[in-house]
Image (cartoon, rainbow, N blue to C red; front, side):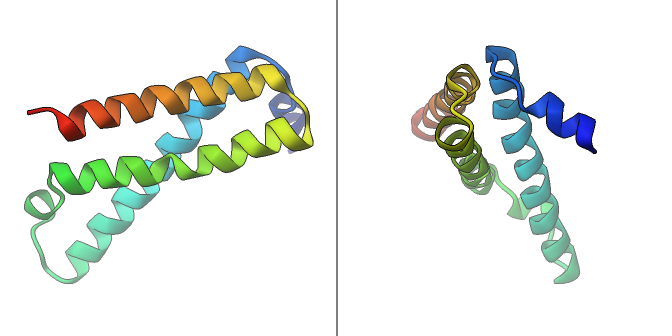
Length: 104
């Protein structure tokens, strides 16, 4: 466990990009699984209920942990490069979300 913490405390673009991708991906997986489980419990069709709009909302919610991780790395640890990597990935996810949300 200690080695993992030491590896995460590194100031680099790569670590920021990794954290910027991993945190939303894990959050999306957990939220999607939770929604699917709740729908299955109530006997609703999962594929029809989890449509494009709901999935886009889950993607938007998945960005939230990145904000807290970004704040931790910038304010507490003073790791600017890692923070920039997290911010870069967060902006890319937000732009992709906007493209899918507002595409005709």
